[in-house]
Each structure stands twice: as structure tokens, then as C-alpha cells.
Length: 231
Length: 231
DNA sequence: TTGTGTGAATCGATTCACAGCC
DNA sequence: GGCTGTGAATCGATTCACACAA
Image (cartoon, rainbow over the protein chains, first blue to last red):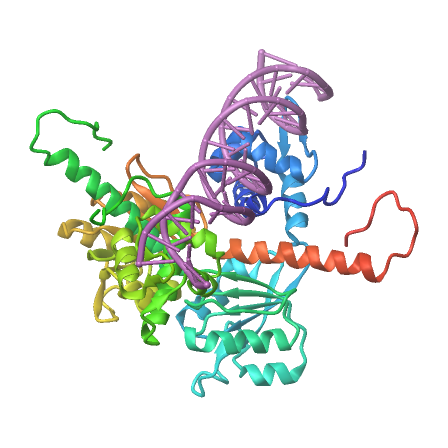
């Protein structure tokens, strides 16, 4: 059977791990490794080998039993699956430090994504050259009628919804929102929200839990201990 | 029964949503809303009301049947649960645009987190004043013996593991890694990895799937094909 | 009557364990 | 013999639906 391109729906959880596999494969490729087992690749990607194999089996069979996977072939297959063999025009709206960080970030500028426009409200920023592009206003960009696939919002929360509306109006169907607020978009448009503070708060939760556990272990006045210390 | 602080293990999925609830509650609080139903809060946080109620029930019962939740009381409870009523000293390592963005980000500087140190390798950056702090080298910080709870890595991938090792050596037990690579840490240390490019790649996957679906609808030329073309 | 809190049911994702192929 | 691919089992998370409290 000739390789099917996408054998039905790939689960979201799997899609979320594919970028990690791709990164790990890239590292092995750079080191000249051409073949790899699910065990090795899973270790490098931080998952279990059974998980990796099940994930990859969703894209079709690209491994060889008793041998492993071909690094180049698997990279190509995952790239294709993720849509990274195409060229997605991206606009970044909001050129504070975060917007500038993303404008210069390799993971953004390479691998299928091409940043074709930068926009900001601030008069003092518009016209500036950043990463080889001239910063424009969003209205200017909308008026130009340029085709954009993905919009990245790195504005303050107050501006995010208005920016999202304008992006949608100009035909953007994928939005990556870094502003610390929810934005709503019409049916058929995809939004992903990344809140940097959320991750920190999750860490704080675990840190506190550990601190509480330690407390129980270190200063328990009573002799008999109910729980043994973890470390 | 008087409010228990943490009635056993809260599921990870729930913990991951608590920051979202807290943000939404903050918005309602600012607007002077004092009481809220699970329906309203769930809408504002982008989840279903049943999910919200189940999540909140994990922290104990803080709602009133037939009425709803008290905005202030629930905020306080979630903050306490997440450990945001304490003060966590944070260091940011790597002062490129991303590091600077985080150093000035409200979600980082408020809400229980206090950025107490900034570190970088680059000679030309060390000594600079950023957000009221003097940038130091990491070795300098390690030598100072200051107590740090959370380390944020915003260096290039090449430096990330070495930075993580130093952070662990100085007693940091929670690490937030923005570098596009996995870092490994000893048992008992918590690492969270945020890869900004991953989110973009997930968007690209959905964008491509939508493009393919459109294609099938708009132009289905041949009646039966052996392999359907992708690109 | 309203809306929380929660057991029961459902759904999905992970892990196990081994058949099948190199 | 070694490693993939995958059904079966397990585990967890979401949703349903309603008893119960105000």
C-alpha cells in the first residue's frame, strides 16, 4: 500500500507532540544519525516509547520492524503532516519586547513560517525597521489587501480583541494570542491562547505543594509518621 | 465544616485551568461584580459550566446553591491554592527580547512573583539596568548564595542545559524553560517547557487540514484516484 | 425556583503486552 | 533476536443529569 497522506483524524494530543518529535529528529539529523529506534527518539522527546509508536502509527507506517525509523524520512513525514512543507505568511501585531522576540525567533522564521508583516499602534514604532521589515499600522495592512494566513497577537490585553477582529476581517483564519485575555472569533477561525503567566502559576502550585509536604516531614511533633518523605 | 486548605490531590488538568479562572474573576472584580454563577464564569474563562463546577469542587465548596460564587472569596481561595499568596523569588536568565518581555510582564511581576535577579552571559549586557535591576552573571548570582525559588530560562538552546544545572546547584526547584530544547534535572526538581514554535506548528496543522477540506469541497476533478495529491 | 455539588456514564488518552515482520 | 504496530486493558478527564441546599 502506498503511503497515505493523512489516514483520518489525528488526535489533538498527538498533534501537540509532533513538534517535539520533529525537533528531536532535527537534532539527531544534525549529528549525522540516519536511523533511530522508538526508544531513543522517545527519550530525546521526553515521552514513552509506546506513546511515540502509537503517535507515529497515526500518520501511517514509516518504521521498519526490527530496525527503527529513518530520521530523514520521518522528519519529512511529520513536517508534511504539520503543514510545514508549505509557506505560511505570518503577521505579528504588537512590537513590544515579546513581538520582537518572536520576530527574530528561529522557530518562527524558519520551518514553513514567513513573517511578512509587522504592525503596531504606537506612532513612535511605526516606520521603524525590525528584522528587515518596516513596522506598519494594522489598518494600513488591512487596506493593502495582502494575504496573511496566521496572525500573532503580542499587544496588551486591552487591544487584543480589536486586533483579532481586524485580523479576521482581513481573512486570517489562525490566530496565536499571547495577550493575557480570551479573544473570541467567528466559527471557522482557530485561536490558540498562550498565557506565559499561567505556566508560572502552575509551577507555583507544585512548589507550594512540595513546601507543604516538606513541612509535614520536618516539623511533625508527633513520633509516628504517616507519610514517608519524598525528597 | 471550616474550609480545608487543600483536600487531597488536585488533578493536573484542573490546576492548568485555575489561572484562567483567576484571570476571569479579576476582570469581574474590577467591574464591581461581587457574585457570579458557574455559567457566567465558565463563559468568561472559555470552559463548560460543569467543568468549572467540578474543578472548583476539588478545592472545596465555596459556592452557594441557588446563588453562585462570591467573586472575592473565590479569587482568594484559588490564589491560595495556587500558592500566589506567598512571595516567590524569581530569576530570569537570558536577557534577549524574551527575557526583557518577561521581566516587564505584569503577570510575572505581580501575583506572588517577585523578580529578584536577572542574569546573562553577554559582557555587553551585564551591568545594564533592566526594570530596576542590574544584570549579573549567573556565576555571580550562584556565588552570592541568594535564595531563589523559580528560575526562568530564556537563553538560546545551546546554553539552556548548563543554565539549568547551575540553577539546580543553587537550590532552585522550579524551572520554566523557554529555550527550544529539553533540559533534564534531578528528581525532585520541576521543569515546565514552553516552546513558542510548537503552538505555531499546531496552528499550521489545523490551517492545512482546513485548506485540504476546502479543496475537496471546491475542486474534486477525477472520480476515483489511487493517491490523492497533497502539494 | 435556582444553581451548586457530585455520582454515574461517557469519552479519550496512555500504557501494556505481544503478534508480526525484518 | 530486535523493534515496530496495534488490539486490549487501564487510567484519567469530561459531560450528563439530578439530588440537594438556599
